[in-house]
Length: 482
Image (tube, rainbow, N blue to C red; front, side, top):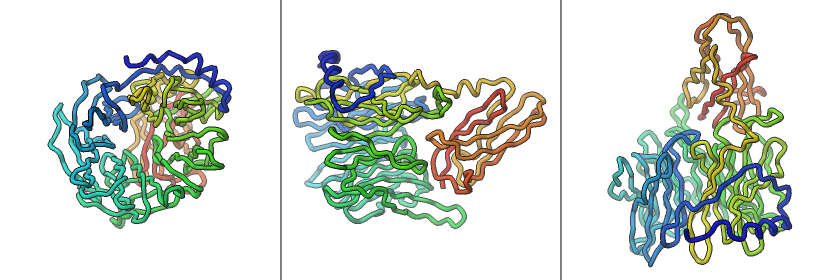
């Protein structure tokens, strides 16, 4: 152990009690530990989760700098922990690694060769790394690549570029310019498809940037496909856009009244602006539990934002802020340690929330994390709802869907009753309710045409549904792609 995590915690807690951030509730017990601490500086990490609800393989890739050598590493952290796999190691700069699902695991990074940047790639499959694949060449500075399962976005000379890996995508094997003026810092939504993709990015001169969103759509009827661009923010200086777990929610930093604040924006609600006045909130990451949860007042689905803040004098910490169940003021100090903690990333690991970040102390940078099971105040309702003997959920088909989907369930005994199907968006808001009659045992289905109770059409994204039989309920989730 290069550091002792517990030293000075009682001092830091005392200092924390007198700074601006108030209404602290330690509703979760995050245990901090070191994740990556090999010699040298460990930084610029990215995470890949290949399953839903923390059930699949999880990998971390990162950059290591030691004795003028730049190394990109890959490591599996779930379900079992692997050794550190060297992807590339050289005296030329290799930086900004990204990881996603591809032919196995796809690792992408930028490399500085012959006075210009390249974007390179390797695939990791069956414990073997492929040869290097060159994605693009002869790039300028600040390219900041962002990788999804089917595409990669980057910046070259202020242009937002995209290239696709799958043959069904319009940008397959050739870069496409999405926006040509003053673009920077793209974030492409990881779970894209051949017919849908979404990118957040900054646009504007340094110190006067706004957030834009580019979306790719393919229309089945006409076979038309195109990218559209929309301005998301209009602040003095808005930077660091990130998607949440779902593409409907985004979060970014905004410079307001000489302070960096957090803005969370969604199709489903008005903008939320953090209320900090004397310290900066930076590098926000929005997240939620990957399943419907229920609070004490029967509200559904808690959600959170992780960020770093300089609220402690001479120190920088990782916090999460809760937005649900009347707990909007709850802020939890996660890192609780001396040094500089920055750039949080949140992942679901098995049945726990894992918050991962860079920790700098005594001139060294490592990667730390803190894990805790889902907040005990908010229990998952999935097992409660679906553990039924008289009813069986068969899912919805198709899923993902474009126009409509059929929600199917099996009734195992002869009954005669009205049932209700309630559909929620990712924030737990009821957006559509339907009903049908069950009068005998057998297989039933009810079609959702993608419209909401107000007659509007649902946005691209994930939705939850609950089939209510009165004494029992079934629960499922589905994805709409327009």
